[in-house]
Image (cartoon, rainbow, N blue to C red):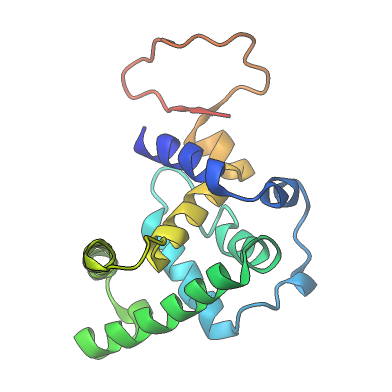
Length: 183
């Protein structure tokens, strides 16, 4: 439920051009915005946010490629720089704390590291006297959830997908262990 609510909330904040992009096939020639090392880091962080379980993870759903397309084509230069700086700062912080690259950490260590980083950056943002802006991880998590929920695999395998649901029923009954509905 949290993923569904978060992806719906994230969708409100995305530029309209992001919606148009989601229906297009990805051309590998368009994936030139990030360096190869950044692409690996994006894939690793996206998979830490939405790992493969009994449903496809972020990598299988093509989330890293969509992140690159949307950041390049739909984000403001300021938000692009927030993502780029955030990737670099995340790598540096991981090296300082663990003495190795984030991709070399175990899955549990990656989640612990990213959870602590998220908590720390949110606290810094709260204490800052500057107007609130989304942190790197807030932007990245929103983008990851948006891309996943709008991917074919996410919509059809992680959620129950109804192409034409008919009418809106606000209190639609859910059965035990039923997936949430994709939009």
